[in-house]
Amino acid sequence: MFTRIRISHVFGLVLLGMITISVLMLGQTSAPTGPVMRFTATTANVSGAPDSVRFDVLAWSSDADRDQMAGVWNLTINPNAGARGGAGERGAGGGRGAGGGRGAGGAQGGGGQAGAPPEAAAGANQAAANAGGAAAPAGRGGRGGGRGGAGAADTAQPQTPEAALAAALQSAKTIGYLWSSESAGYSLRYAYRLPQPDGSERIIFVTDRRLGAWNDLWKPTGGATATPYEFTVIELRLNAKGMGEGKTSLTGKVTMDATAKTIALDGYSALPIVFKDVKRVSAK
Image 1 (cartoon, one colour):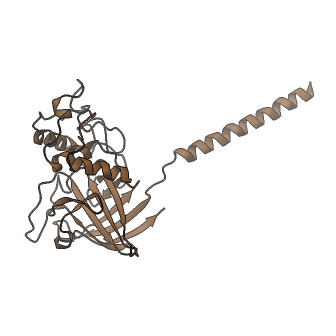
Image 2 (spheres, one colour):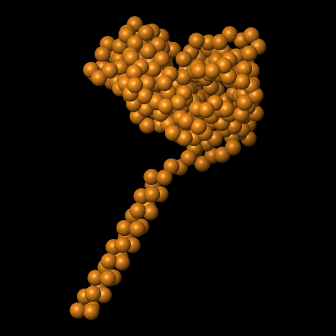
């Protein structure tokens, strides 16, 4: 009798230990890992300069992601095909439809709650309008363009590369954030690295909305003419030590870099610097 009790006691301790180890392993697996890379910079040649900014990259875009965006830009891939209103993603930067988010930038504070920015509805409606379709309502918690499934406005191919890219960005996953002095950040929907033979690199970021869409902090200065894009393409050029500068599509034209096979800025050297003193400060 005593032996059976001891055996049951030992078995219970072993089982408890296994459960504890499983819980600890599950916690380690589900814990957020943070940015895979971070950059800091100071703004220049915009109305809110100088302002300290930070890029937090949660994941890099793959070559397949690059090719997907290239196909959208070249109008060989329909960004609306299979989408429910083009902005139905839930989670980091998706929310529940085009108008269901909280805050102005897909995230709240310096790394807090993520949600769909309210201006996502405006971007989706503009893309639909450019495509000749009806604009989707931006009501509370809308699931894309409506509950009736994909309609003509959902599946119609946008007529310009700019409209197609704007539509694709609304349904793309958030893979990073741009933080500034604004109360909310900007979701990065594309983050592609282009290592160069000399050890330097080009980095292409694309946000799902225009920088300064709801304020005057990003208004170009110096007489530069603002572009009409509803998204923002950012190109950083860093030396082998991870330091450099960055420019944007706020005043620059977006194009397809045929050599790199990615969306990029046209005439980079002639554009004003918007991010100076760029530094790579951490990486994993």
